[in-house]
Length: 207
Length: 207
Image (cartoon, rainbow over all chains, first blue to last red; front, side):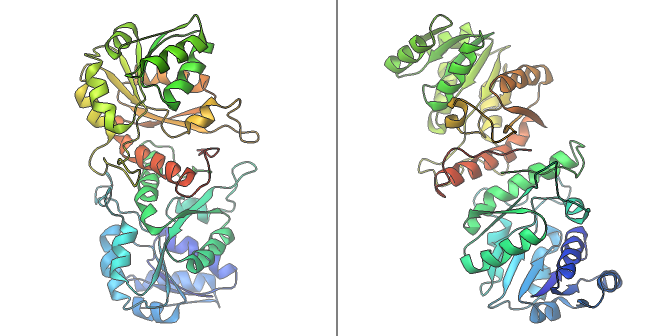
């Protein structure tokens, strides 16, 4: 499949690397042109790079993996996503990482879905650390972490479930997109445990 | 230890049963006098029952295990809890179970802590299903679920960690009481998976 990745951080990098290895075509996009050039060259023939709007046009699946503060502008710069699958990997952290900026009566995923009304939005790849997804193995002893995801379009979710499986995680469809209201705080818990509680990033949840 | 349980539902029942077997003294309390009488008699010599205020006076540890709609009034009817450990097992569900009634900038645990300023509040026993805690075994294959908890008083948390271990769960201190803002939505996710998504109650999370 053709996958456009918006964001040049750890999450986008980890996903791009795994996707490229599995024979998908990747286009990286970011404001940091030098970084995505390096990322694409490291993958080789299956990867290229461009502007967010180019990545969106190129892709069947658009992966949004930027900090929350840039998520809305990055999404808008990608242009219309009608008929595309949009994988929202964001965690809506406050700028000082002290908590969630969105929650309770809505979620980052639902807010982004409003901005991309033609896309099939799936929340995924935000509950496991990028460092874990970039490491050589996803195994903890004999088990692998759960890759939680949610969305309203079952065909899009099936595609994303396959991508999660390729990443070495055990896909778990938790329900409609509004369940991001629970997945996002759960991810915030993991982030807080990893950093504020100093447990590190080699931690994960198994359902 | 002397444990006062406020609430005659599944959670209170499961905790009381396990605690009584482990030699703790239990006092059940609830508006449903007949039910707590039956519950206490089923446990036998280590268990009795009374009014919430009697259970609170009797106990070193007060377990609050009622529906969220009754939590504040139940807590107030228990009277002052100065010097006691209060284990908050509530999940702040909306009356129609469609989502969380509290969240984002606060949590049920923090709201209850304001009502019981002299107590050491620990959030615990709300992320695993009562049915699981009541079953013969807590094992999933060779592993047991995580018993997540949080609170601001480390001595109180140590006591609660031992109770979690006795319940057959693996205790995990996730941090200060404000982390209930993340644990409560995570519990809501599990509740939604169990009921709305019809996965049943034999599900759990392992950290």
